[in-house]
Image (cartoon, rainbow, N blue to C red; front, side):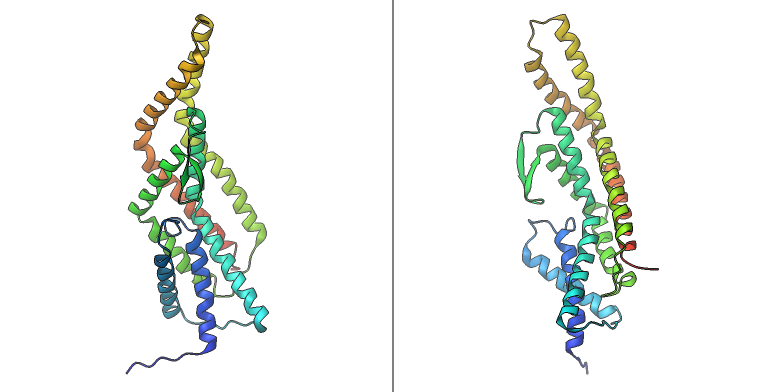
Length: 261
């Protein structure tokens, strides 16, 4: 006969687990997309929290009154948000690269609404983002992201997060540097071809001033840019692998910044 025991302390411990996982799901890629049904997000969050609560040994959580428990809830929420933000760096990098590409092609004003980020994004950025999410699923990176938040309970017990702000700030600065570095690397083929095209158009403008190089150049930039995007589409798996490696580094950095060895 199976017997279940319930107490207020156990329920409070479960709520802390639920808060960390729910905030992680809210900002994480793939799971936190706005076009994912809210019922599915809530169901998945509760299911994962129940599994973590069942298989992880319950540890004692000490707090003084309702204000102390509120502080624990806030701490768990920040922990989940930081881990989810570290996993969401893939979207930031690819959106930045897509915006740079459209700026060189002259498509930066052709904005469209992105339901994932709930903001106006460029055409190339939106296209690259969905390709990256598809590769994320194909490469099982969504399983890695889910394991990261579950395994975080081993290193960072419930209510035991110790925020090392200097370490976290160093990780954020490193991410900002890698964001520009990786973004420019993705944009480099288009940038190089457009730069050569601008040089050719400048020489032609000197040789034949009667030609309207501005009108001709706009069309050539779009045509050549689209050709370069088609040619370099085979490089997207390697780009995605590089971005996923950066995602793993950021997740490890954030987790290391919230516990003491």
